[in-house]
Image (cartoon, rainbow, N blue to C red; front, side, top):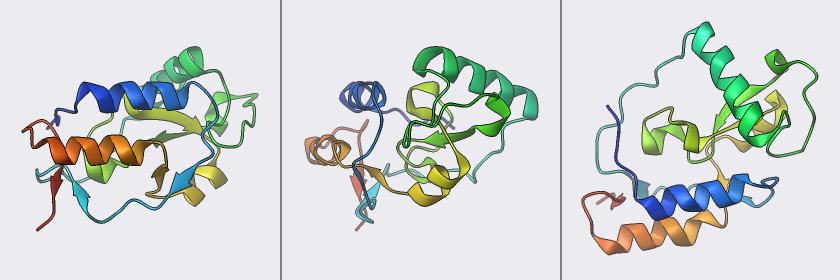
Length: 134
């Protein structure tokens, strides 16, 4: 299942991923996409390899959080800028390369600059945006 995400959220993620991501904050429990997010699906090793390559082409072969340069892309993990539990997909606009320590340290945190965008999406009331958990 693919969940529709507001264009302003996608644009904010593109802007944030254009440079190193350093301003992480815990994801408020308030946010959900208002849909049941399917159990996290694993990408096949072939798709992981291709996704890493495309992310390295688009963003550079570096960790999005600490800037570590990967000499070999198999050292990189794929991280969701907005956690998978919130968006329920593997679309490339929401993915970055990360070293394993940074990916694990990030957990379900989100870039602080995304919080106002996500809050605006929540307040807009559109079917395409976040819903508050009652």
